[in-house]
Amino acid sequence: MTLHVDTPAPPRPGPRRSAGHRGPGRSRGFARFDLRATPYFLVSPYFLLFAIFGIFPLGYTLWVSLHEWELAGDKTLVGFDNYTELITDGAFWNAVVNTLGMFAMSTIPQLALALLLANALNKRIRGRLFFRLGVLLPLITSVVAVAVVFTQLYGRDYGMINWFLSLFDVDPINWQNQKWSSWIAISTMIDWRWTGYNAIILLAAMQTIPKDLYEAAAIDGATARRQFWQITVPMLRPTIIFTVFISTIGGLTLFTEPVMFDGNPTMAGGTTGQYQTVAMFIVKEAFRDFDFGYAAAAAWLLFVLILIGTLINYSFTRRIGGSK
Amino acid sequence: MTAIQSRPRHTASAARNRIWDAGPLTKVVLAFALVLSAFPIYYMFIMATRTNEEAMDVPPPLLPGGHLGENVARLFSTEDAYFLTGLINSAIVSVTVTLSVVFISTLAGFAFAKLRFKGSKILLGLILVTMMVPLQQMGIVPLYELMVTLGWTGQLKAVILPFLVNGFGVFMMTQYATQAVPDELVEAARVDGASTMRIYVNVILPALRPGMAVLALLVFMQTWNEFMWPLIVLNPDNPVVQTSIAALNQAHGTDYVMLFTGTAASVLPLFIVFVAFGRQIVGGLMEGAVKA
Image (cartoon, rainbow over all chains, first blue to last red; front, top):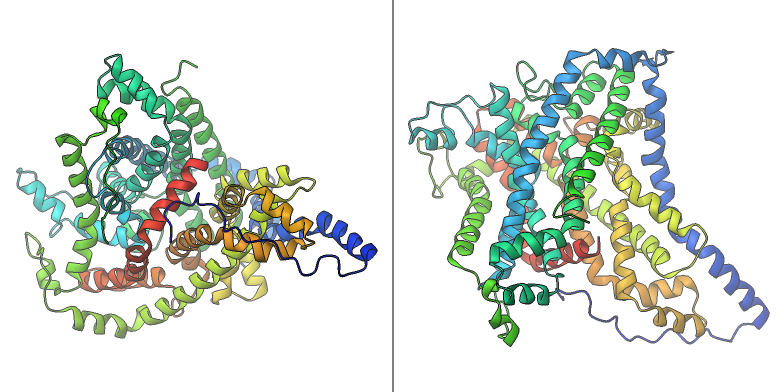
């Protein structure tokens, strides 16, 4: 049980026994076949299963999206009708806006906090491992559990958050009721679960930054804050990009938290859809209204959305600390 | 959870740059983060020991009560939640998926890291690209139709099969094998006449063992937490634990204590794993991050 995995592999000698006992011709033929073919054999289980359960559904979704496709099996080719209908569907755009809103509301504070936390975890302090485990604790709770706990904490009448706010003379808030309040509630669920995880990832990258950079800066009289902004952040750029990617995909496919926040799996996302996300919209169209073609088209638009989101984030994060 | 940490080494260079010492602000930040991280989990377990009346006290109770036993009994006897079935199903699904992902990932990781074959770079690149696609949500309609066609809806295999492989697992094992297995070791085994499969069993698997453990833990947690696909493809009377909680929520939304007992029970297995293997999880995440 080692923490660090860079321990050398056990110096176990390769098996010797079978060497040279077989006829040289046959063994050499087998060896050549083995060298050429076995690698494909080794990667084939992954690609086989991935083709069936990953690529095939993806391609087939595109096909379904071009049809009026009902559960009963009635299908008519309608071309891009589903897409043109979606583009003028207010409910779809509402879901897009909600998803983007909650994504921005959760991701930006999350990554800022994670950076702050990683910096703190990187300091010399007693019980460092204890703190690292502590901030990862939320990751081991299921999203469903997080949603249940937070939904209760955000309860209007008996929730702890309204009680806390009442200490400051704030009137009870019906968190589910409004766009802004439900977005805040859901965003905090996301942040609570993922900030520590991102902090650990950033911490790992921080530890690879050569210490002499800081020493040189210290000799030049740079303050800790300056060292953080001029050395740490720029050196972390690839890892920050990585965490932004992960958060973008997670944020734009948001599903479990809002569904559980609703308490009632109609996928409506509140009385007026104030927190219905695109993923919920897709599930609702497909499995509540049984309009498979429409749902498939929405799934492809979600993909396009993620692609655009990733590209924007990428070009944005490239500039972090960057005059390069 | 022991928090024993090797004492910092007081090298001359460390002494020169005092920014590495935790100042009071750092201590406050860390303590605050710890409380925020732990509180909701603590609260969940507290509520599982209380009654519904107590749960609605203002301010809410913050210490354990004496009703855990009856809450657990009530949870497992709640008819429309099928909680015990959910727990057993989740265990079956998670263990199967974990074994499969770890096995298939070590096979492919070995090939990508240590064997030379045509197209290996392209194939690995393909895996990386598809890791960026939310396949689960995008392909949900055809996947559902596939299960309907096969007649597998409502059965556990419908939940297991789509998760048997995991691009992240292959990627992680490739990185790990590259680092943990020296090329010379593979070469030496080859010279000795070992076949590729033999090298996999005798050289690669022992070297990958710590990495496999981390991957197993991560995949187990991820599978245990799966919600959307089981919600769609399984029937309410044969749920996994997460959809079982959703059913509790729907049927007894105001029965907070039941919900909290259910979520606490669903988190407990992960909690035990974390307490036992927390160090490895942190280490594994950090290793993976540096290499990514």
